[in-house]
Each structure stands twice: as C-alpha cells, then as structure tokens.
Image (cartoon, rainbow, N blue to C red):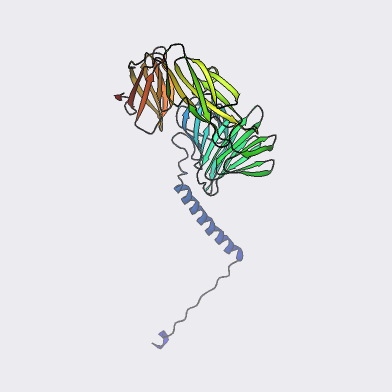
Length: 412
C-alpha cells in the first residue's frame, strides 16, 4: 500500500528543430486560409459562373432600353442589337443611335443612363476582397450617373476627355464628350466628383460645372439649370378649326440664375432625329418663340440654355402637344393584339388599327403602317397598360390591355 501512495510520471522531451516548427505553423495557416477561402467563395455563389443572361456575376447589366441600342463584345468583336435585358462585360462597348437610350446597373449599385448618339466603353467591372471596381470611358455623347451609398472599397470612375472622375456616394452627375473636339463637360447636381486631370485633383460638389480641354480644366462655375417649359403644355391639344394650320407660341422660364440665350427645337419625333426636326433655333434671346402654319399632327419641343460664360445646359425633357382638326370625334378601333415579354419589365406589343394612326403607351409612340399594323416596345412593372390610339383629325380611343394574355380589359 505504501508503494501506491506516490506515483512518479516521467516526460521525455523531444529535441525539435526550429525549421520544423516553422513548417508546421505554415501548414496550419495554409489549411485555415484554404477553408476560409472555400467558405467565402461558396457563400458568394462563385461556383455559379454565369447569370441567366450569360454574363458573369461581375458584369454590368442593361436593365432598361429604348430604340436602337448595340453592344460590341470585346472578346469576339461581334456587334449585337439589344432586344432584352443583357450583360455588359469589361471591354464591351455600348452604342446608342439617334433613337436609343440604355439604363445600365453596375456591380456597385450605381445606375448609368446612356443617352442618344453616345458611345461608352466599360473598362472595368470587378469585385475583389469585398471591394468593387467600376470604370467606364465616355468616348462621345452624354452619360448620366447616379450613385447611392457606396460600399467600402468601391471605386467608380468615369473617363472623359483625358480626365478621371471618381464618383462619391449619393451623387447625381452627367458627363458630355465630343469626339470631334476631344473636349468634355462635367455637371454635378448632387453629391461630389473627384476629378483628376494631368495629375491635378479637383473636387466638384453640388451644383458645379466644369469643362475639360487639352488636358486641363478650363472653366469651373455654378451649374446652370435647363429652362422650364410653360406653353404649350405637355400633352396639350390645339384645335385647327380653320383647316389652314395654327400659330403656336412657345414660352418658358429660367430655373435659378438667368441665362443669356436659349436653343429651341421642335420636331415630329420624340428623338429629334435628322429630318424630323422642324425648328432648330439657337441664340433665342427672350422667353418666347412663335411658329405658324402647324398642321394637324403630334409635335415635340425641348430647350437648353446658355450662360454668359458660355456654359450650356443639357436638353430638358421634351414636351409634346397635338394639333387636331375640329371635325374629329369618332372612335378608333384596334385588334389582333399580341404581347411578347422581352425580359424583366420590357414588353413588345403588336396590333392593327387604322393606317397612319398614332399609338401611344408608357411615354412611347409609333405610327401604324400602311396596312394598319404596329409594334410598340414599353417598360412597366404593372400587369396592364393603357394604350391610346389617335389620328390627325382628333379621333381618339383608349384601351387597357392585359400584359399577361394580350386581351383588352376595357375601352375608354
């Protein structure tokens, strides 16, 4: 019993080299890093390489479009016409024609609106270790950008005329580039833009305007707002009771500081393309312009202002008005309705009505062909849409169309 009272334990110590300890630590560290990386990739769904539209998860996406919009793929040099929501990868080029407009969602949540007659190249669209990099180059035309609260590590840059413009959080800005003069313009209506030109950094904030030329900021001043239309009102109808055409007085007013002159355009198309423009008058000094002899039809008008310094605003949103004959009043008929869902909230509606009639829905309009057929592309989140059909004699009808089955819910 006495021998069991005390027990002795002996520990043999190993002689281990220092290099062996380093190797064991490295193996443990590597195993932890590999496990953490696998968990991160799995939770970010990187095992799924492509989105439904064929692009990678780092790609930008065209979420809305109007008219003729094209993408030139950097990988294949193939040019495709956009007919549905689709991806834009790094290196791809977006081109809009005179009737085109595209809304692009970037990976950092910012929204880019590519205006008509513009060329934009997506230089970078990538995410790495939680950061998000967006870089585009505006080669020609106009680009509007809106950012919300930017995530940590986000870099959103627009290249314009030898300048790099980093967009800050909660920013509304527009950029213009002229391929012929190699000049550019920057307008910041909200938030801030860090502009770097020739190594010099300048921060533009709320309501500031700057021009870039020959690698320099050549002017910086308070932002001039586009004028505001007054008359004829948006969607106004003017009756041609004599049948000889009518005289129309266009009027507008300044928003904020006054301008020194204005440019007025009146057209038969909401895109103001080529031969549809009836009036293109610059250096209008007052706030009114009169035009005579307008025959029945639908017209659109828009304005931009010029400051004494030479700063010129963007065009304001066009207003439309219609001149109708006084003997109208008949109901317009339509049939052969068909609805195709292109993608997301974009639909293509076709039908048949009286030849030459104007078909309108969701701010878009088309003319019925000589056989009465028409096709109109709209974007809406609703399950129904209102379609108005009219002619130059003032005849009008409205239809509420189901976008699910293409049937008329009611007529008005």
